Image 1 (tube, rainbow, N blue to C red):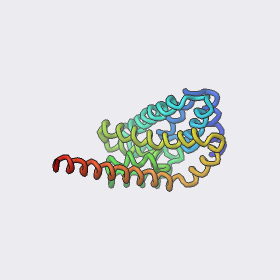
Image 2: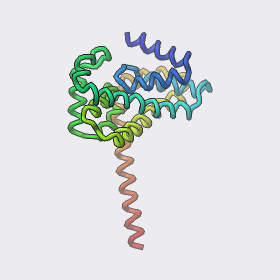
Image 3: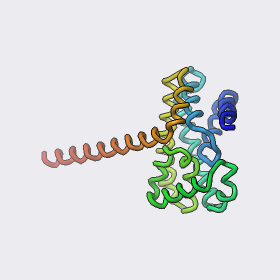
Image 4: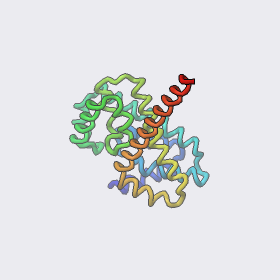
Length: 209
């Protein structure tokens, strides 16, 4: 079933172009099980062969993710947990997935919105607990934007530079989705720490002078 859905998603992008891509990325950021590990590299590949524009694909990725996440936030704020418990099965969301996501949100607070974009399953439903908790919209959308831009941009650029090999790599990304996501998060943390330490060192040198 999932393979048939994947083929259908590819057909949507090929036939509808940018509107189809916008639609799929919007759905991917809601509860609909659209595989970003397939759609994003494929869009990047189409940009690489000149069918799409790379800047346009990157912009669509970020804006569509904001729209989809906003819809999920609204579902959480209006429907609450009972909505997912009752209808989650139609979106392939298991009760244990929701439970784990809620626990992560309660433990790590708003930062799980950013980190959750890199974790399979969590990225699809993390906005719902944020809506249930009525998380302030400004940090919610900021971290959604950062997370979706980094993760989606990573997948898009892979497809762009790998060309015809994008399908092979996309299959491996899907297989090791969690490992890759955690690696990206760790890389961001390392770069963030390095930046802070570097800035403080520069400030100390300037103060000493």
